[in-house]
Image (cartoon, rainbow, N blue to C red):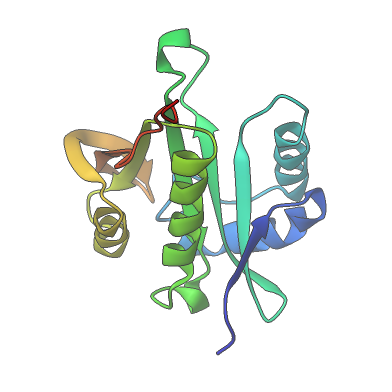
Length: 176
């Protein structure tokens, strides 16, 4: 098995991302919908590259194939929430439990902690997604609450956890 390479997503990755998200084993663990639209992915990637946007969209490649993606996004336009970013992630069925999620999460946390000065990272995860919860805990995410009947998944309302992590080494000014 070759090593995983992490890079910033490009607009021409839209087709590969649409294929990744079309797999029921992938989209069922996300807040995504079936019948993925490649053009919607292309539009989102194009929008994220507009100057001044601070969104970060990454892909994980192995042997030239995209096997995962992750994003770091502002939590919203509120000035008092500028310190917080939200995370989303997906890993191809055939690449799950092989270090792809770890590589993506490491890249997101490094970028958030060391390059943009984010203080808080937040995410929502289905309560029954034990592998994802274990990954997030490994990176210092803590459970903050349970959302009951949070989302409709395949005809059933399911719970989700709110998880977050604070920057373990928040930026400080260099001593004079």
